[in-house]
Picture 1 (tube, rainbow, N blue to C red):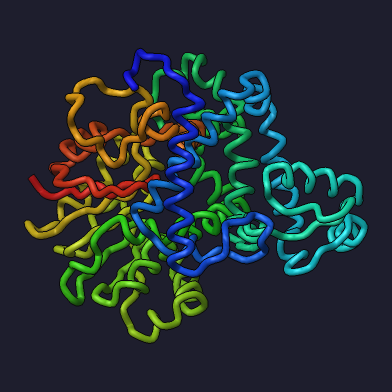
Picture 2 (picture 1 turned 90 degrees about the vertical axis):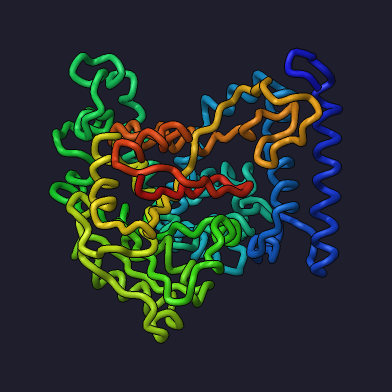
Length: 443
């Protein structure tokens, strides 16, 4: 289908969905798995393995589903977007009440949930029903609820913390975005303390300073949210060929918190050792997290912690790999450049920086490729948007803009940022997931 040829989108989507479902079903049969069913209260084994072909199929189904929703009822779709703030509210309420852990593996009626949470039965039931509409929890009888595969995700403390961060700081900041875009003292600057967050919270401190100096309770929640970075873990671990690194390769996790991004990596790949760098107050939290969640890595002595401010020259010189996951997106270009320069200053010719981020891809389809060329594996087929409708990346982009004037970056943005730090982008590691790894080396 050509870009300007308005063909039958429904038929095109039917073909994509049918082919993709067949691929997924074949994989389930091969692994003797049960069908995918959101009514299940157990995590499906498919979530914990990664196959490029199956991942492509699932992504086509997901993207087609969103397009179908908009195509079939445009007005209802627009209303869903306008009122979806209530969805986040419902999720926030149930996470604050810890309903997923309260239910565990049993069904409870709203009265029993009310007794355990202190929230009036009718009101907690209405919040739960709103989530059931999105297949989070199940209503199995009038006002009786149980967990399903999606609601079980919110038994995780870090995921509940992330919901809190989005529902409070992020949402309040977003509400002030229009003013930040128009106020003369805010609109033309990338200063970290001139974001919509500063208007919402009436502060001259950036969000990280505010957490530290004014609201350490929110800072503690933010740190907990950032620790739980292992979403789509099998896909994430397949993003870079870690197994090809030599034995005893040191990975320095710069700004790594408690190691939430890198402990899954060294846990799977025994050829790696890990040094997590962060502010000194995270040292005890790192060792507690390591002991609780990764005891085998602890026993192998392959992980350690080092106090390091990434806005100062790094004290670990000539490391083979400096790894940054979801760090640069927290900072505007000036601060991100300084951070990279502090690493470039201590790199050897063999060192590399691996930057793991969500990359911004265009929603338009390029017409530069000849008609007979093989389609690129990471570009969605028509009639889907070529970037698969990467709404999460755009949402994250607006989140960091509202909170600290930062951004999710394009490939050219990464190249320009690297050049300003004396680096060059050597390679872009990708799969069909939402993240990429940008490999940078010295010029």
